[in-house]
Image 1: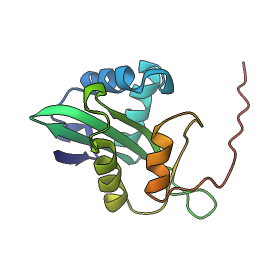
Image 2: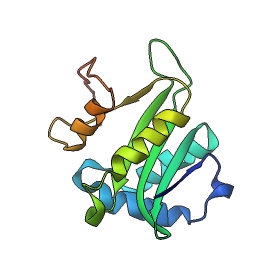
Image 3: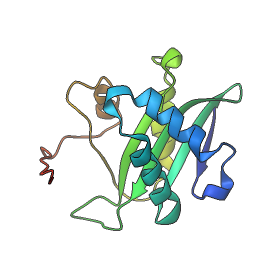
Image 4: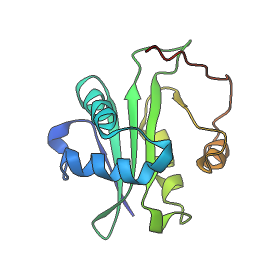
Amino acid sequence: MQIHRYTALAQLDDSLEDIVDFLFSRLEHYGDSKPDIRKCLEYAFNKGGSLTIGRLNSQMAGIVVVNETGMSGFIPENILVYIAVEQSLRGMGIGRQLMQHVIDHTKGNIALHVEPDNPARRLYEKLGFTNKYLEMRLLKP
């Protein structure tokens, strides 16, 4: 697998819309709307973060998006926002390879949110992520 990390929109080999579509369809019920995914990518490219794409035979196999928080210590420097792997390629270690690449090439600590029933949770734990807090949110109308 070839893995490339992008920190600027101009570096991309694919269109932003192709990346949004890949994430939207592969994240399934764990994902966000296309406009929210687009906002996340724009944040990564304009304020700080990275997009990591794994390819098999020139086709997108998986994507990881990490945004920089601008903080440290009390909040990790980075938040892993999205990881998605092509459905037909799941279980082949692509997610692990992408995550290890991101860990190796990201400066500072990394946080992520994962739902308790998400099968990717086991991967995160094997890579050393721990559950320090229970996240609570207040969603205002």
